[in-house]
Length: 170
Figure 1 (cartoon, helix red, strand yellow):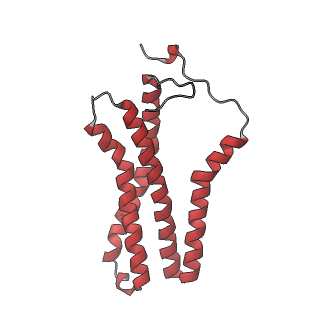
Figure 2 (figure 1 turned 45 degrees about the horizontal axis):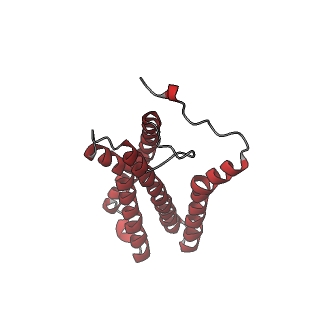
Figure 3 (figure 1 turned 90 degrees about the horizontal axis):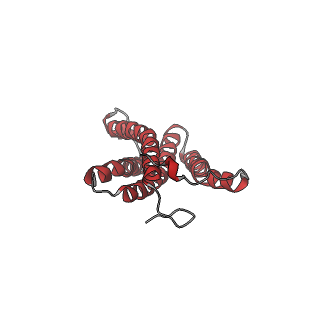
């Protein structure tokens, strides 16, 4: 069970706000992932798919699997909510959704880097594909993982105060 910095259980208002924020973030991610997955599912039916090398087919299958896994991870909080609806498990939902969202972002970064590797390999060459895929993975890891932690450490502005009892709904 999650506790706040002062050792207290999160309030229902805090849990509800956290749940709503997570759902909004998941909606943004889910749309892009579903478009990517849909596109990847059509690729084998294109006329040039037979021209792919064994390596390119392996990368394609890896990014397809990554995209499907990412879809599963970002949709999992919805399934959790549906299965636990009205069971008074908001804290479990928020904690689980956060873990799924983090895992989904990690698999999305790997999947996008794989897509870049595949496309650049087809268009320019294998070495350039590896470089471009590696750069994509580094950039996404930096933007989504490292930069938020660095910004948090460097920003000396005070943290938001914890919710007060008057923030609770009546």
